[in-house]
Length: 187
Image (cartoon, rainbow, N blue to C red; front, top):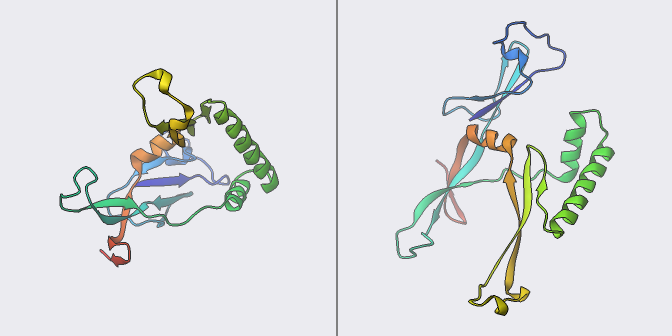
């Protein structure tokens, strides 16, 4: 489980180097069993506990269809963050207006499309990288290869340091068990 510590801009910082008040955002590991979205207050810091919901899904082994089915954990999406909401949230956290953020993100998407179409890796600093990937049928002789054998095209994302650090401290909470797609059993 990870914990976000926010340092409000109006708070006064302590001079002790070990104080948590020197941090704008710190990730802290918490004990198992803490609930999501519970708020704690430490001096002038607001602590938000966040965890990813998951559910257990009964699945067959893809390598051995005759083997007994097993329960596997699967992330349960709690919804989507729409483009408008994303721009509004970014605008609320900084000095740019929503329209400027929309224009910047539209420009980023356009530039990424151009770069990916040229076969380039798009690096977004500590956020991560985007790159193209293809798949399809192989041939024994290179002379027999044709682009018609490419049947899968994907854009792959490789997280950078910021997201990799978050993944090291992420926590999970169970939302139930799905035995069949129509049946949900609470834990």
